[in-house]
Image 1 (cartoon, rainbow, N blue to C red):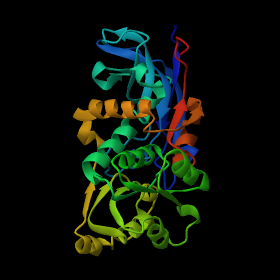
Image 2: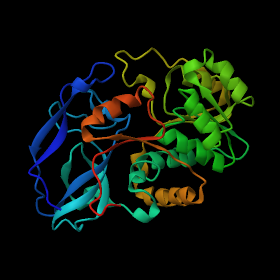
Image 3: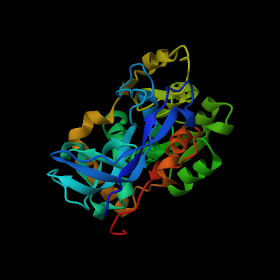
Image 4: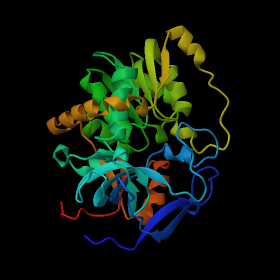
Length: 343
């Protein structure tokens, strides 16, 4: 297929204060990049937006390198190779990688991973068969480690990571309780994903009491995506030898001042509990093993997933901002283009 002379690309217009707004993003039109020696040109099909990107918009220290004002934004992309300059991938190959928020981007082979369409829809390589799925897999199996008969609690339970984490815990035989932000999400968790109980934090005044009712035998393993008052409540319900996997703290990402704390650490002494933060990138050498297992579970119907898809690159900022308003169920994606073969 022919490649246009220009390509749209999002850059960071300014650093947000509090919750990002559309004015923090700038959609520019630039000449379409040409792949240099040993690289390829990729046309974006799907773009991932993820909460961790909020940290990259800050000037301060984060576990992900911050973007400079004026630089292109980057995220997980599924795309189609449209031109190769000795880059190892033939045109038409579907690949995934961390690329610019753009219609077209160049990349080296080392930055890309081929996508196997036989494993499922190519969009799933940004969700259940990609970084979020791997995060759930390793956070559950390596850090939280729920076992049969234990109670597992997950926050952000209807999101891309939390929904998969809860299902993996259930496959391990655990009783699973999820926190989510709407009645629709609660129904999704209980009726479609098979969670034993779900709590709508948006309509719950007393998190401790709600958790005691949903998990009367206490909490043995906790997968924390949110932090804040819900995590305080979970800490109050931990059992002896509980394990806490800290994956994210989305309730704090837009805070202009971090609250004082934590003040619940005495619970860890009483319960001899373990709290461990983790980054999925630490498990990169084992991603293929996790993805293969996740694909088997999906094919067997043991793991369900959902995608919330926003159409058009121009709407990527709104999709990103919506993450912090809880607008998505499952993985939030932006659809940018169609495959040239029509599949």
